[in-house]
Length: 266
Image (cartoon, rainbow, N blue to C red; front, side):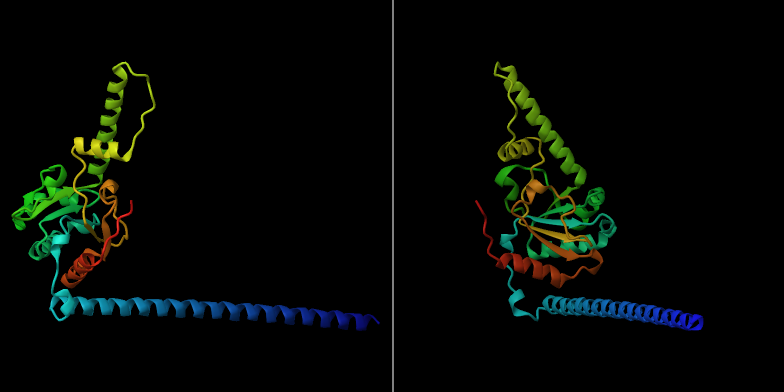
């Protein structure tokens, strides 16, 4: 009787061990399957983006060689003011920025705003003005700032300029509100509207023209802190890292902008 109980207990232990081993190997096979699936998806996505890069490179080459007919004609008059945003680390590639400016100038763009967050481009503005035979933007207000210049005009700005402009505009509105209260009126809470802010930015000289098109060079797909009040109706295009600068990609971006109809909401 005792031997039978021991044998049954031993059999139960063998069954438990077998079930445990079976579950363990099922889990391992499942993990291996998920790992293979993840690697397969990752490989497919990588191959897809690689194929897109090859197609983009070939298209850029054909455009730059003038082999694609639709890109031969470019109505550059629609790009009255072009903004170029460069990631600060890539902004040190002054030769690439010079090449880009020479390209847009040759295409007929006459007014360009160069922006990077840390003001790297601004520190080299004399070199850019000399290399491109350009004029420095003087900050003229209103429609006068968009008159067709005889040569390339460059504006240099950075993140600190935007912050300083907002601070000056806020201080202007605050002083104007105090003056209105000093004239005998009741102390009221200021009502800051978009039109008042636009007026204040113009008064302190931080308004600037609204770019028609903004090209972003860098890994980030954002405007990198470019003054938001100047890009309310601006078309933003991410161009990729500056080290992969391509003439054909620039033509493609400008051509697409000039051929797309823009609808402005009210």
